Amino acid sequence: MPAKKYIAVVGGAGYIGSHMVRMLLDHGYSPVVFDNLRTGHRRFVPGGVPFVKGNLDRPTDIQRLFERYPTRAVMHFAAASIVPESVRNPLLYYHNNVSACIHLAQVMIDFKIREIVFSSTAAVYGHPKKVPIPETARLAPVNAYGHTKRMIEQILEDVAFAHHLRYVFLRYFNVAGAHPSGKIGEEHRPETHLVPNILKSLKRSKNRFFLFGDDYPTRDGTCIRDYIHVQDLCAAHLLALRHLDNKKDSDVFNLGSGKGYTVRQVIDMVEQVTGQPVQYTVKPGREGDPVKLVASSRKARDVLGWMPTHSLKDMIASAWQWEQNRSA
Ligand code: UDP
Image (tube, rainbow, N blue to C red; front, side):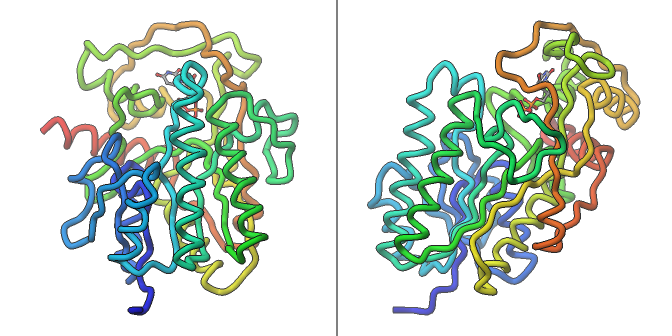
């Protein structure tokens, strides 16, 4: 058996996974990308990085990945992640997220791969009682997407106990921004996220921007979120991988900046960065949208030594660069 050297980036052709692949390369790791390209983009995978097209619902595809590319750790980004869609079509989410992860865990055990960094979400907290939210807050998801992520955490905890697997769960808050190269960024169809939706409305007037809810109990009536730059997020993954490589215990960390911005503050920042006025129409709040989600990222700082270095302005500036590039 050849030495296990690869880091398998599952979902590595997607928004966050493709940024991770570049960061792994920059730090001397050997990533291999596994993706079904349903929402990922083949062109997001850098030349020279091995790519395996496959589905997590087919264990033979995962076996093919680990046979060809002896892997020592998995970073698992592949998931369906649109909250309203998960409410309308929960089985799609239980299938795409939960069943898929069961297959992945089984094949990892078969191949004796014992490290996993898993992309979880702030949605596991539902409507939190206390903000900033610590990792110890009650887990009470309020939509199918959040439930699937919480279930996967539980499954991996049990598998870890039984099979000597070690994990790091990273609970993401609101990820935004793009790679400094301008070659990759957020590209979802349909796009549901705030920053790309505002920017798209500036690029083409037919892309109207809707602000969902202006009567929440916040300073300006709009929801508060904690935005984190995709590059900072990937830096945390790298530290999580090192944490596992250093034989540290399994753990869970929130990833956010600890600062909350309302939707209107994000709009103001977009206007400041782009120099263009943002036109919008106010719509009722989306069902299940929590009023305020802000992370306590103290634990990630204390245990992993992680510190986000990019501001909201940096996120918007890099996302705007990407948005303009891809129209070219
Ligand atoms: N939002 C909005 N218009 C959009 C997209 C989002 O007003 O086109 C609001 C949304 O209601 C929430 C915030 O922006 O209050 C962040 O939403 P996003 O979908 O980016 O992330 P979420 O917090 O839902 O994961």
